Image (cartoon, rainbow, N blue to C red; front, side):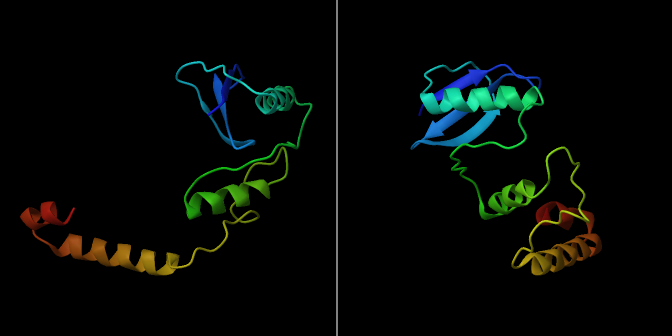
Length: 124
């Protein structure tokens, strides 16, 4: 997988490419440098973004993640450039089963609080 490390105001970043799309931008543990034209363009756009000269990226993206991560990334794209996220104005899309998950968590917590100390260790 081609990747390219670049310095940035938030630390060393590594951009990863797979199948002619950017699949990840991550903090770099070790520099990587087997770049490509797409990675060079991504580095150029990131430099312009950090310099305050670019507000929108024009790159092919193919991030890999869980369905929840995909919903979060989609919601983040709706936040206008330069704004701080506000849960009231930029809520996450609803999650199927989330209400049930909250109910189960409350039920587990209630059971945990009623159990004797030695049983709590087995429940946790």
